[in-house]
Length: 483
Image (cartoon, rainbow, N blue to C red):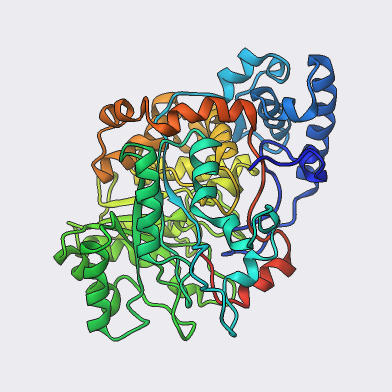
């Protein structure tokens, strides 16, 4: 859906979203004064540059030049560790801007979301995820019912039409009531696959071993695989019906992993990091990952958010760390899981926040590449909670780790080849996707044919989904749900 010109935020929105919204798993972070300065600078430069080029602000901000102009301002946020390779002329030169923020990488987003707009899961007396969704701007998209603003159509638009994403996973939602059932995710998959010749969308199936007796959990897992044809299991160890979660290396976790392997599906996507406010952070710690990976070498663990925590400052690797990305790395090292091991680190929400903190971003990416391995880092965005992930894609294309940090901490350079691995080639290997064959099939599918005309006629919405204030976050916490 196009954003109306009459809407105030339509003229103010920047193509690289720098607001404080979250995915509901951490408190909105108030922008630092230096970030507020960058936002103000980008707004002023957009007006001036648009006039120079004879464009409207909307046209300018929708262009590669608009994205480049914001990234130029963001280079003020670092102190020498990370920055964006964007030339000054790119704010006015389309070719220079495209060289910085455009690309032809295969992009496989392993973390996207939606809710069901048809089943009245929100029609309950107790709090639910609906209490949060109703409070955010996307709920006022003009549809007859607010839930339709988070539908499969929105997912298709924002992920496949408004971004360069070519393949995605719609990852399972958790909680009670469930905003997205496996059957509904399968319907979305089938709809997208019909548009994309069977090549665009995979699904996860949520397993909560602490919400029912084991026999029912085991039966549910079998149904997820046999009936709904999921591509991987999704585990959320921090959640539990009584507020207490479980660990991967505990009885419930080990039984769940063993059952998944018994059923023939070896990929486990596990939320680690981003401790949901009000939940016991012990169960979101990645300290159990290495133990589980060692116990089940035939399993593949995709560590969502890579153990990152929003209130923890990331620096050089600390082998004694108890929190953040370092805690994940430590767990792997203590259990002999190396760079060719069965653990992968995913960047959903992590990159989205750290791209506003380039020095911390350099440390996180550098540490993951150095210790987890360049073949073990996966691209994910948490779309559509933040709107289209295109800005995250553009920023990552331009991001670089400084020569100073490479020399001081032995971090690798973020070469185009390395970025291609992170953007999609690594995930393709995990899921057994043939990239050449997929590209060939997608070349003339409905989505590929629609993208050029859609982008020209509409342009990206730049909408950001997710709670942006503590008040909105409290509404979400009242539901007992995240994503």
